[in-house]
Every structure is written in C-alpha cells, then in structure tokens.
Image (cartoon, rainbow over all chains, first blue to last red; front, side, top):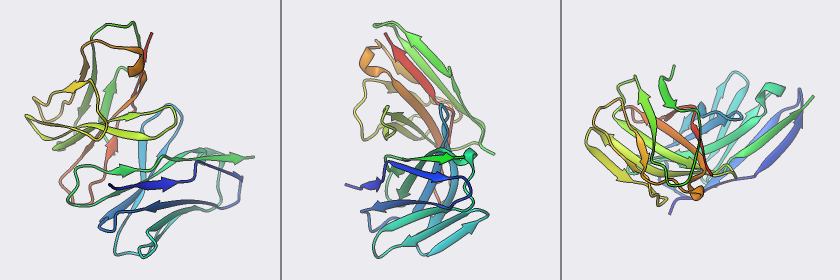
Length: 111
Length: 113
C-alpha cells in the first residue's frame, strides 16, 4: 500500500532555515501537501504542490518535489518560535479515497 | 477560511458509556472524514463519507460508527467506550476540487477511564 515517511524531530535556532523532508512510495501521487499541527489543535493546510511541479514558493515557505526520487521537502526561511509545531506530509491520487499522511515531524525552534 | 467544527473539545468519560462526537461543516463539502490520531502523532483514517447516506470504513479498524444524514453533519458514535478508545479524533472535509485539500476541525481529545 501507500507509504509516507518523515523524520520524527528537528531542532533549529530562531532565524535559521528549517528543512523538513518526506518520502513517499506511490508513483501515481497527484498532489502532495504540508500540514501544520500546533499543540492540542487540528491540522492546518500550509501549502500543496501538484505532482508536475518541481517547486512552489509561498512567502517563507518553499516546497521542493523530486518526483523521480519520490522526495518532498518543506523549507521554512527565517524560522520563528511560532513555527514550533508538528508538520505532516500527505499525498493523494485521484483514485484513492483519502489522503495518506506521514507520521509527522516535530519542529522545535530554540530562541 | 475553513468552517468545520468539532464538539466537544475535550471529553473524559467512564468505561461503558455511549458517546457521540459531533462534526459539522458549513462549506457544503460532499466528502467528510474521521481520523484517529495516536499519541505518537500518526493519523489513521477510520471512516469516510462521499455524501449523504454514504459511509465507509477506513484503513484502521474501529468499533465506532458514523452516519451522514445531512451534508453538513458527520457524527461519530461509540456505543460502549473503553480505555483503548482514548485518543484524539479529528474530523475533516473536502470539496469537489481535484486537489482534494482537507480542512480539519480542532479535534476531540477523548479520555476513557
């Protein structure tokens, strides 16, 4: 079946860039997503990328997609303490019923 | 702006009680989902619905049941709660757009004693 994997934890200093990585197995993925979850809250969609794109930039966020290697990354520039949260990678294809989520990466931003 | 609401936000209840977790969305979305989130953060799909009177079980087996009598409402029921049901339950919905973006509620943290 489909599988999405992420590293569990990342710690950076305030002002540095953060890069969160994700790998997936489904070669027919149509869209790939990044969600953010703050403590005790639901998931908030940050950004998404269509599978025929290599890169998408949205303010401090840059998404890179290497479809050949099935690798997705999220770069957060000038990371702030408010960016501390769990970040979930997810993927979908049009034939499947729901998104498949990774296990989440906990980002800790140190002042 | 996402308009999807879950109640209660927190629920602590004794073993054997019947509970219903509410989820409502005002976006007119056809597709709705329930995810169970483990303490270790991973999300598991337990139920989904593609429209009124349509419900299906997800990837993770669950003793809960759901109903979809109205488009905007997708409640989840546990007939007899057990400590193993302690978890966070997240409701989500998506519209007809091909990008399948999910909008999530704030979740219900359920603790069964």
